[in-house]
Amino acid sequence: MTQKRMRRAIGVIVIGLCLLGAGLLLPAIEASRPVGGSDDITYLPTAGSVKMMSLGYSGLMADIYWTRTVQYFGRRVNVAGARFELLAPLLDTATQLDPQLMPAYEFGSVFLAEDPPRGAGRPEEAVALLERGIAANPAEWRLWYELGFVHYFNRHDYAAARQAFESGSKVPGAHPWMKQLAARMAEHGGDLVTARFLWAKAYEEATDPRIRANALALLRELDHETAISTTSASSPVAEAAKAAKTVQ
Image (tube, rainbow, N blue to C red; front, side, top):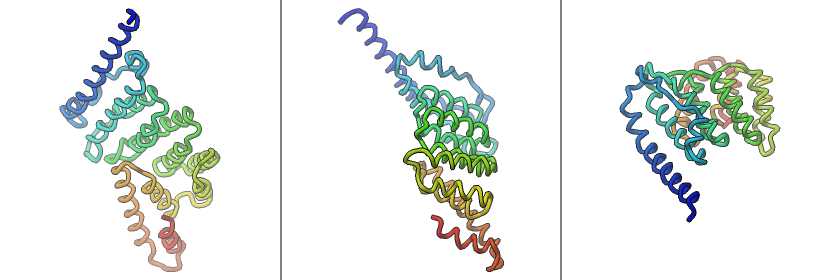
């Protein structure tokens, strides 16, 4: 073995041990911190510096940062007064290390956009994350769906939601209901049927149990609101309630 190859082999072993150690230590470090405490703001190396130290294993480092993000969010979600100061920087680092890390865009945008205590309450940062994801992954129509979702529910910008769903519907392989969503945004921006349709799709498509539970809880809230509103069987809201039951 040449000296150059030997140095490279040693470097790979060292970085592998460092990455393994980081993966094992992250849960212990996170558990030792008070939730939402003053030490929530700490130093995070830039994605560029992490990538340089990874010796070509930036994808593995991205996975570690994504794992850290999930742990960070999991300890704060549904905790009164919890802060999420590091959530956006962690997601930014993970997606810069691996621009094709789809879970970070799909789930990370939900973590950012949902109102406290279900999330960070930062929909603008969720939009920025998804727009970066779309730029890096133009063939992923689901990112357009997530963007429309954030615009609709968290920003209440129905025009932007319609544009997102319409753009996503044009991506090869996009689900046919993307066109339906774009049409609904144009016709019925904030009605209960549209809201229920979106949350039903979120429940059906989600793989993360926390996101599914959140979607189910909001579907039940919408059903409750619909039941209260349907005092007159001939009202437009009553007709919407009937239609909502068939959306799933």
